[in-house]
Image (cartoon, rainbow, N blue to C red; front, side, top):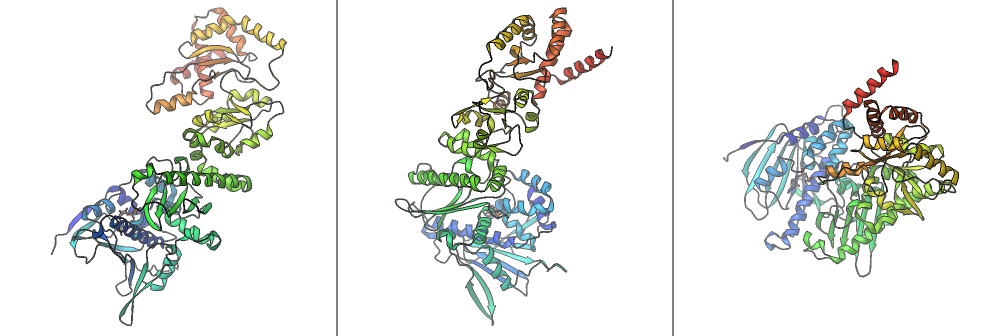
Length: 629
Ligand code: ADP
């Protein structure tokens, strides 16, 4: 007898298993897809290593499904790479991937219904076994070693490990099936060969290794291959059914929703390859994580080379899933070599173009669909403005922004078409959120004159804004920076003179305001953009926006605090009040307090934090009291 070790699952795994076991899934079938996919990966790994280590060669790589109706078990067996004891503990006892915490949180938020989808996306693969099995055994032997190990668990708390025997390298996952649930019509008998055949056809037909069903017939063992193994991507698009593409996508993307768009094409000539790309319908939970899964699968002549090849598309297209199968690349390609491979560069260029063109077509011909795409992935696409100057022009054709007229996002061409005849520039405003932008005092004069302003409220927009630059010969103009010049040209002589006169008459007051707020502002002046609010803050041309400053500080960069310009509304009664207080003495606490209040409420209107909120509240209360005296 060999010694049996007992171990605990990592807390996260326990939590996950609790959810897998206790939730009522609408679709338990996916467990088989997950196990076959793991087995197929193990076969790929062995075949890949055998290229350089002939001792690992195995001419008959295969996955076997062995149902046993009497014992009520189903065994999924492969002769792939296998696992050592340490690897079993590492791979099956813990969840190594970062982002697990966030995943679990999402799972709880999504509730039981949405949970399954998340499990699909996250690929809890192996653990899905516990959806159908009360007890799971794994017997595995690593290729190149003669030791095997047996792992068992009922999914609650812990698992056991024990030395074992296995003739060949590879893994057997033995599922002790749960009894068919009473009254549950949807629950299937996974020891039934007919049922298994259906499931393989449905979910795993294109697996590039044979999936064999091993049955007892008249006391004799019988094996037959169930899947067609036809590499979907080598077949002409016209011969593949949309459902086939959808199933394939679900398999490789660990998603349970069909893709929004499928892009299949083959390149011929000097560089030959097949590409099959998908734009998902929904963003995976790890899209914005730095460690999130990204990249395409790379095959060379039907042989799987690597899973997350992130060289094949730019990072800002990381939402695209799929694969490339090349006839020309070397089978011994390593990740390092990919970095400098000219063929890979050429493929990347072509794929990027294909995705861009597909999106442009979608935007033009299928507006609703494009909106859905934008809602899920627009933020990622906009990262291209920061990363990829070569594609700014394409991105300008693709971006959508909400505007001061409508929260339904709008493309730039549509915005330009709606511009006033004498409007020369494209107006935009940057801000923390749509909510604060909607109420921004900076928009008052624009609203009054019915000039539409683009709302840039995403964090990436800070980077997108400078790159937007120009569209159809119209420059982009931030309404919160510099002097606003509204359509109608420069102000008439008369108005200009009036302005100068105003500025001159109040120069003492403006200077006193500047002095009172010297730490925070670089100038106080009269505003041309305010109609209702008393004051606002604007940047000088070329200044960093306060949001950008904040963001750079979060990244740990030392950014000096930029001072902005305080603009006072000359038509607001506040001017009279300020004049009076100033007259009574610019050093008086009343004047100083009013200056500070004016500044603070301008910050608030932008959704920015106050330096001293308690002090602000106290001053407002004092004012209320004073007003009643
Ligand atoms: P995922 O497949 O998403 O990585 P799983 O929980 O399904 O997650 O599997 C965890 C790991 O266990 C795999 O990444 C792989 O390293 C290993 N593994 C699972 N099944 C097998 C198998 N049949 N043969 C070899 N290794 C396996």
